[in-house]
Length: 450
Image (cartoon, rainbow, N blue to C red; front, side, top):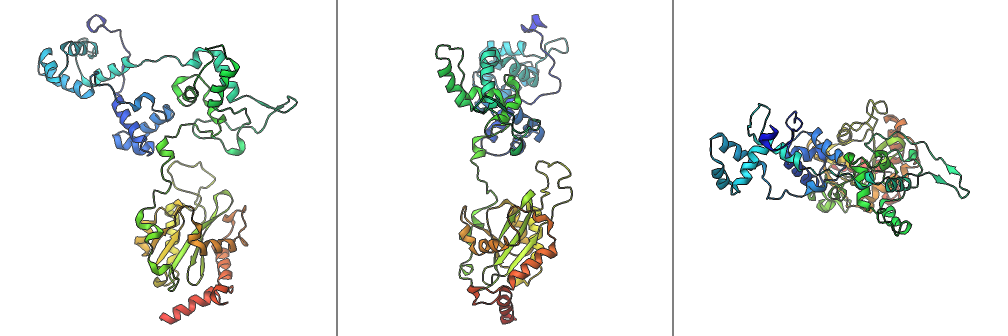
């Protein structure tokens, strides 16, 4: 076979592999800012494959972000060659139809042919696999070839810290690095923590005459993030300031965090009658957050200042099993849980008292469309960094901190207990209501429309 093909024996491809062109399309999707799971679906591969591609390359596509030069045969051209060859079309005729040189087609039919059957059998999938395997130009990284440079970089990234007298300071004991996420901020090891840019530029001062002691900061990042480089220890990524185990694509980092907020549900689209507070039935809402991801929902009616508190108990299994990526939010205020809790609250008051709800930008209400359909209450969102647009709710949250101080675990309170707090606020006289209580103001309105 070596004499026939002109190429040394190659390892068996095993199961059919996904083509590089598919992976290139995957990285184009990643560049738009979507997740690896959605990018995998977009190019027609499984989610685990997309996640493996992203993790294996550390979130850095490198050459895969560039299209393949047209001087090389594409997979579609190889499919055309395979079909024409099966029809016994000659090499020159195949080359004429493809617009290629006959020598290109001739080499392709021999060098990239399948040889498992003991003869040359051209198949497009095998030919593409062989061409991609032969096109690899794996050269060792600079940090692999230069141990002195690698030691310098590693000592500045990791390195132990010392006090003014030179004594070593241990700091906290860091949890084992599992290659997925940064360790908890309270457990991060104390290290020198030089950034790759600092290391790269400091080399010029420490070794002004030694050109071998040169490396770019991008090469250091690649050695950290890309698993196949093998130059630096993988756990060194936890010693970077961000502690990220993967590079975040720029488009994803700059993506809007409020994808659930469309133009139709912005506060600018809210009816004008909400502004003057003349008619009850328009509410403002938010969460007050406590320790260990505990929370209580707060709802305040704009006209009467009537307050309702939403009990958000933790889901079963919280703290007992590890968190699942894209799994249910066990803390108690995930999107589905929050919408269901608000829907239960709606049924406690007459329908005319639930016309609209203005919320902040929190993702806990990203299931607002279903809430609107099932309850009939329209949901609107305030502008970014504009808490004054929900001033009534912000003021009420300040009053509630008398009962639920910051830094306390809010999950210890039962539904009956938080309802008692809401009842207390609703029977508290308000200057803005001419010293009536919110309960009295709301009751007067219900009597007037009865």
